[in-house]
Length: 411
Ligand SMILES: Cc1ncc(C[n+]2csc(CCOP(=O)(O)OP(=O)(O)O)c2C)c(N)n1
Image 1 (cartoon, rainbow, N blue to C red):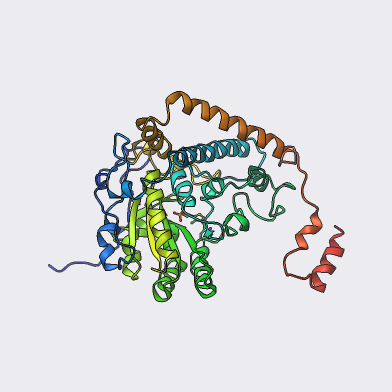
Image 2 (cartoon, rainbow, N blue to C red):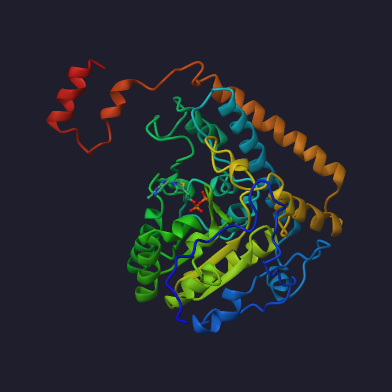
């Protein structure tokens, strides 16, 4: 008997009516991997691309070489990191509710992924540029971006720096190292590499950081970016946030039969690591390592952040239609806020009482900013920016045909 050609379709281990099943995931012990030298090559990065850098163990202790690598980071900074993550979660919760109340048209939460942006941003310096997706609001919060602007963008009122031109969550904050987010998946990844090439040419000491989701690695721009980064060795960190889902599509579709996304980057000749994305200390450590490598001229690094998309894809999505309701609770790498909290309590730097107090303070702060921002207009109380501004910024100077259209529109 000869074989027969057939098609194979990747399926998630569990669907809505089934028990969540993460048994196929190999989760290595915390502290098992070394800190490699900055001059590591792609072939040498194999154990890192196939393994998982983890610092926090199940008891919340920081263990292993990567813990030593960031042992100089002051406790106060870690407490700030915890507050950053709590702030992101509180903002997401409030704005998602605002969407449900009809005050804004759309929202996207990053629940469960807070550590990745909050921890990474701490490794960056003024002048570095992130090329984020719509799910990296945590970078903005950790960079100290004014909440009035962040929320104004969601309500498209006169506090919105984009003047109502963009869908909510597509922020743009040049001064905070946050490149304008585009709705077209993947495009920012190759732009990050180009930006990094420009940095190298101008010798400005700055780096670029590309961000992409696991699903969007299937886009051509992912491959172009890795090839250009490999060929020209610019100062760029290429992040892949593997949250297991691309809307309703299981991550196995974009991954194909490759073992990890990090391994795929390694195939392009880019040193790559895979990291526990729910471990704030692992994020902080590996971000510092990759950023240092880029800045000191050792070239690009790819990082797969292994995490889970806890919330719905967006306010337009209902994940109970395609995955078990309680899948997030079974995610073996836990919750990033709970894990850093446990670590800080274990160190004697934090307590349940202080946590509850901080939660209340952060909620009050977020609610009071939200009230001030909503007073500038929401979908229920629309106070749009003047309609004639839609003709601005299409070109640097308004051409005659746009001026004519503006006159015809009588705005
Ligand atoms: C070029 C392009 N194709 C399709 C879409 C529609 N789309 C928006 S989000 C999304 C899923 C992206 O998933 P992933 O990259 O894993 O990121 P996540 O949403 O999980 O953070 C798709 C297909 C799009 N915005 N752009």
